[in-house]
Image (tube, rainbow over all chains, first blue to last red; front, side, top):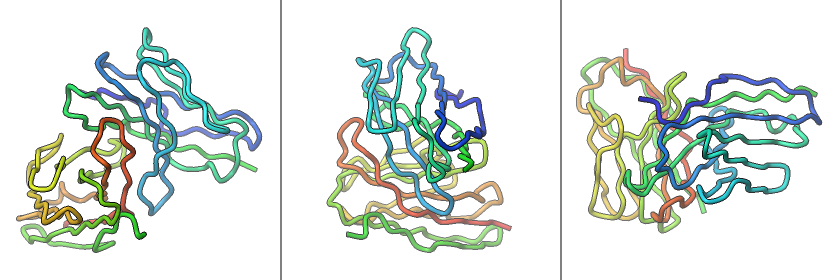
Amino acid sequence: DQQVKQNSPSLSVQEGRISILNCDYTNSMFDYFLWYKKYPAEGPTFLISISSIKDKNEDGRFTVFLNKSAKHLSLHIVPSQPGDSAVYFCAAISANQGGKLIFGQGTELSVKP
Amino acid sequence: NAGVTQTPKFQVLKTGQSMTLQCAQDMNHNSMYWYRQDPGMGLRLIYYSASEGTTDKGEVPNGYNVSRLNKREFSLRLESAAPSQTSVYFCASSEGRLADTQYFGPGTRLTVL
């Protein structure tokens, strides 16, 4: 039972354009949603998060949008840079599940110069 | 600060062998976690320790044991390795409050033949 799903395994974008990474979830009790970024041979690093009571959070080039009615969130990167090429994991957390992070499968973003 | 460190970086085992993966953090975090990452599956929680002296099962605990040796160290033991345990293992730590950022180590790539 995959509670957090990233249905696109990969995404290729031209440098300077917008990258949009999508994530769907099934559990309406999630309290927070987070995005982690992972480079090869390294551990994931935290990128940005959003509380379930908000619909948008912005941090520089990164914006996360949350649509609770659709149980969908997306990460927008504008403008995309070659250094953004990495695997992006969507994750969710719920207090009534002991605060454990539930990760999606990941989307590999490739930003081409 | 080294953050979260893991040893070893790579390991090859034969079926039935045992080994312990070591993890240490120097951020004075309360909570520590062990995940495994498999292709197409994202990161899945094996065990976690909300605070020193406590451990709990995650999503995929079978075949593993853990020890929270002290506040800094959290080890993962495979008593009798199986090919299905071939994976990349990540240790993480956090302050322990809901939605706190988890900081990940660089990972251990384990192959079981």
